[in-house]
Image (cartoon, rainbow, N blue to C red; front, side):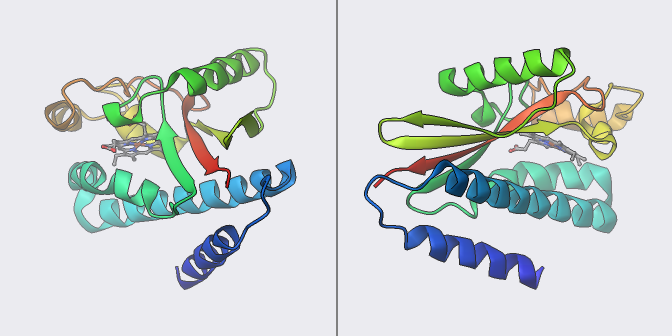
Length: 187
Ligand code: HEC
């Protein structure tokens, strides 16, 4: 845990100190994107596992509702914004945008063709956007799998009461569940 925060601060300092007018190389954005998405994922997964172990899945869902966005955004800086986006979202604030939809569609076709999915960069005039796919893992099924088989009926009811417009059930392991989007604002 301590190490994670030290790495996070080193990244923040690294990013805050970057002053090259035209931004950095692709390899800088890919490396920083990889590190930030891995850290954000570990932070959310760690907090979720602790919440499940301490008080069970029902309460962990409520914990997610209160904290998932704050945890996602906690490594943000003035020039870096981290989001977790999805086509079939649970929280509508995580919906795909027009720009991320193109990346999403590309990942979907690659997955269907059996290709491996790699992080990508999208350059625009004043931004570089890093994207990384989030694939569904076995531990995610309890809250995102098939209702009444993977997700117990009582949990389905809790999810539906907290998220009446939930679209994020019915996934299988290995499916494209979401995207990390890390947006680097150029100076
Ligand atoms: C304890 C239940 C639970 C588990 C286990 C769980 N999630 Fe979620 N997940 C949620 C909830 C609740 C939200 C909505 C959070 C919010 O309101 O911001 C969510 C949101 C998400 C989102 C953001 C997009 C959206 O739908 O709003 C992604 C991506 C995601 N989960 C992926 C995963 C993956 C991958 C795993 C497994 C590694 C996982 N989840 C495990 C409950 C869970």
